[in-house]
Amino acid sequence: MPPFLAELLGTMLLVILGDGVVANVVLNRTKGQNSGWIVITAGWAFGVTVAVYAVGTFSGAHLNPAVTIGLASIGKFAWASVPVYIAAQMLGAFLGAGVVWLAYLPHWSVTDTPSSKLAVFCTAPAIRNSGANLLTEIIGTLLLVLGVLTILTPKNLNPAHGWDVGFGPCLVGIIVWAIGLSLGGPTGYAINPARDLGPRLAHAVLPIAGKGNSDWGYAWIPIAGPVIGGLIAAFLYKVAWSAT
Image (cartoon, rainbow, N blue to C red; front, top):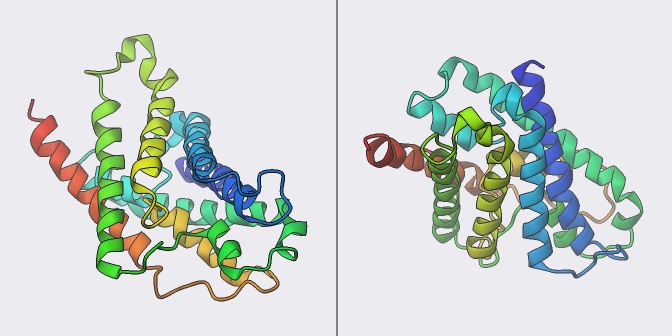
């Protein structure tokens, strides 16, 4: 499978399962309505795990522009391939959001709150404060990228036994779950520009009655924060961990 297709399909799977669990919790008259934050964070973590297992051997399963840029910044990924990966991730996220819209088609019209409909597609802050929200996204993505770089290393996983392939995606899912449980409260932990921007675009163009606006004034934070956090994490890894 070409890396472009792998990143597209992997990100699409990630968003289908991630946005899907949010839809199940926040939309009216679903089986999972009001089941809470623990269910949402678990669904996203399991979604990441499934997606990484599905395409990891084909593209490395970045599924996140912040990961792609972070890896490229320390020489672990070719800069020439960065635009291709990001384009695939954005398209996959958009398509994944469209699938969730179809899966929950009867529930949009019976859900009255526009903010609940928007929450299915993208993040929003609990308390709107641009500086604080940006900092939260930086910290969350820093932990994600640093966790991926430090945990998925031959010093912890022996490639000769295949553990990096067999168990690595589960560890990535655990990282995402931990971030969501501990740091997801302020902003909904986008920690992934594609995961937020692709579905936000889908929200803007899909015919959803009473959906309200797509909150474009906030949209730059789940883009800038994860990219900055990923770059800081990559730098810390290169300075502190790679030197040991």
